[in-house]
Length: 213
Image 1 (cartoon, one colour):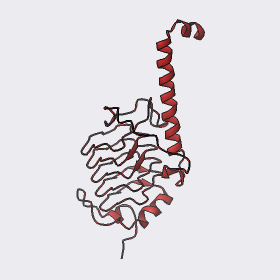
Image 2 (tube, helix red, strand yellow):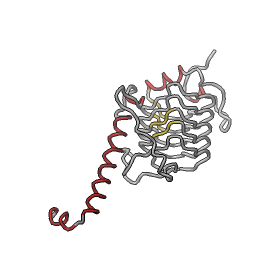
Image 3 (spheres, rainbow, N blue to C red):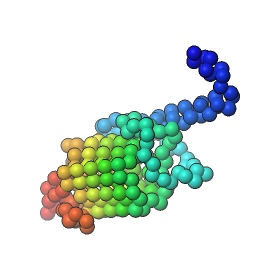
Image 4 (tube, one colour):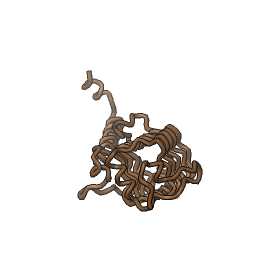
């Protein structure tokens, strides 16, 4: 039956199917390569051999927040979810599945990410100042080198997620689920200080860190 069906398809249809399957495979491979496991070393989102593909600036619809319909567990989409260098300050994406997203030099300051999914997200060197991740699932993601001043992570799940070199001043981690290894890195971050300008929470105390002297 499969052979008969394929035989009935024209060449254009077959090429479109091949392209769709190829894009899906590429997006899945990149997502798995970026953040393929829960170990802190893998959550960095980088390997020596892996390089991010060039940005497709010809895609005029690229810089938009869209929820995946495939399922956050696989961080899979029909194409690479690339938000590098996008300006999305103040954007609203509550409950969106943004798993597998790639961000570098991206501005999502003051964005509403309440109850959103960021499984295997590559969230490096970007502006998350004042972003609200309340009740979000940020699993096996990397905020390496990003600014998260005044960000809110109340009751968020941050398992296997790293904040190496991130600016955490004023961030609120109240009741967030953070792995024992990851919390050590957060508490050692010298920028974890001050109070959140919205919730008033003390940043170090909200993460369960010993107050700095």
